[in-house]
Length: 183
Length: 434
Image (tube, rainbow over all chains, first blue to last red):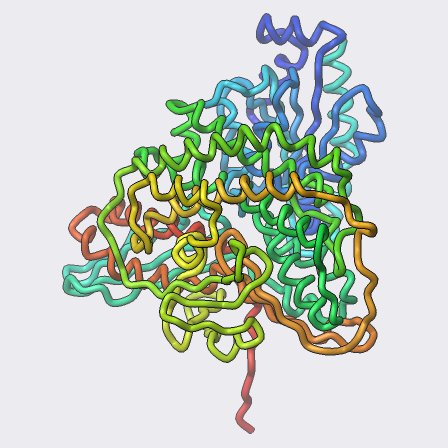
């Protein structure tokens, strides 16, 4: 079910600190600051997946990693990322692939494809907010974006089975990312 | 971009960038004359009016907050005031002040976002706020910091910066301490100065000469710039109580959009910052009136492109008012007044960032909502936007479709339309011949 985005290899290197000297230094330090930000709308079916993954991760990482559930955050994402060395974002995605497909993209190296992240109904979507941060020179050194292909985003609906099924898998994958970064 | 024959030209804007929600515009021109201007909405229809039926009144503030991520407080305020009218509750003193304060937070968030990120790029010649940030990082930083000052008010009073959860019928579920409010002051003082600079900066933009004839509509209060209370007044002399709204204003379905169009006695009208400033500038504090006078613009403002000036004046006002309310805050004895449920019909109108927002509810003796009606500001402005486009388009018809489309988008953005709020569920009546 998992199909990674084109930026996967680069993102893995980024997290292990091999891509850039500065990433390596920050990741090898015990004081590396990792922030996990789940995005979405909790009342719109699969659009809640990022929030739910973040909620689940908070129980796992306790106070070792910042975890934020950022509902309909828009432009405020720029502010939420500030001060972190590594940011891991989780958002809903729609590219036409099977529901539950997990995309993994590295936004640290350049713009990620806007086509898989639907434009937010509130002016600035995730891709825009990342590019705004980059244009302002405040994008954290490492930004990994996980996108989960959605099926149903109707108001008041629960997660569709295909998306609910990959939730644990994504939680484990992000926990691995955190370990890699702290190793 | 569009379909053309020698006689007919269509300008289609598939997705209007930098507006809240999703919308599209189709303009048809035949033999050089504009035939149709249709602002289309394709956001999935909003079910909220039907969704509220059968819900307990206590659930209403949390449900309506979900209608919009940009102006949830407006929905909450119109809802609680309408329901309080039914129950005979009058919220006063510090609780009333806190409601004004949370509304200030929303205006600051919404106006800062629109002024800096959504509309300023039009005047500075950028295709987006992101493109503008590359050359003007300090301006964008200022805009985001101003917005954050609004977020801080919303987070403190509402529990979080989006979809606040503490507003309830009778007051709040929790009220802040004096100390908590005072902690906001330093940043608000910075923001007030930044807002003054913002007005000066915006007043210096180049504005196209364009002065359609408007009917402005806003709330008017005896001695305050309006948020939650007042009579509905127009620039043409109408002065009615909120209870009379539906006698004068009516919503119509149009075939090309699933948002309703609201008209005043059959004609389009204008709500929002420009209308509010025109009708209530004498209710602004002296310092804010002085900043407005220093722009050199004469009132009433007739150019829709000056909407960004009105919005930045209101940004400044919301910051001034926040500081005033914090200064005099004395926590109320209880976070909310006790509620005694009784059946009835109640209505309220408050000033959302984009203009008046009308709610009407019918509640039964168990406190259950039996009927709900919501008239958002963007559905009220839609007819006016189309009229503006009809008037503005002849100046850009000789340009390429792409340039004409961009010009149309700029006109639409003057209204800061929140299209996701303006969509309604369509009541469908099926008649079957036997």
